[in-house]
Length: 92
Image (cartoon, rainbow, N blue to C red):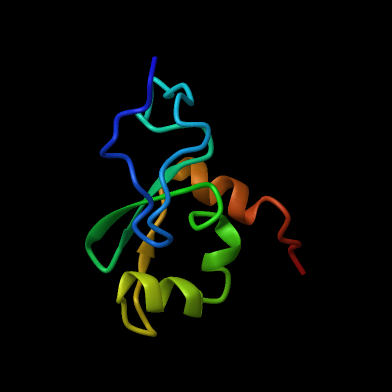
């Protein structure tokens, strides 16, 4: 099944690669692609731009610049994303 042409990463402006990447039935996006709700707006991000590393310690400068969000923007994570984010934290 070909990837719809309207799937584009809001940060880097790239389309899925390969162009015929299969879509996941749960999300309707290629594997690794995510949607993130930042300051109340929903953004579709590729596997690189949506990586959790861009959200540790706040939203990265790269995403702030490319999405036009403020320095102290907030991001809401779904339970699956937050589970992997906090999995490696140690309790002291």
